[in-house]
Image (cartoon, rainbow, N blue to C red; front, side, top):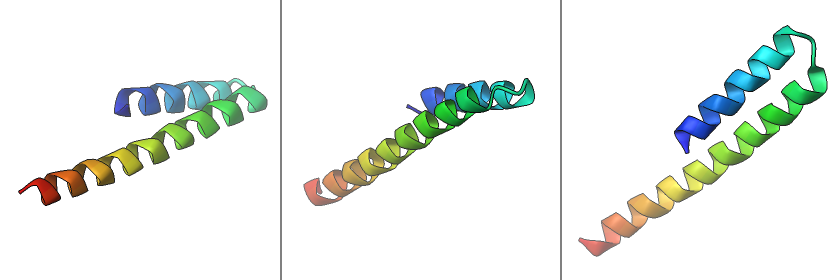
Length: 53
């Protein structure tokens, strides 16, 4: 998932440099959504590992 976040952030940066504001905004939004999903899954994984032991 981290790979996808980085890919979308790079796309957003490149689009912003070339003046494509809408594309940059869309890629940034997608990267943020994936980042929040990653954080939720990380917390769930850590909690499940904690309760298994």
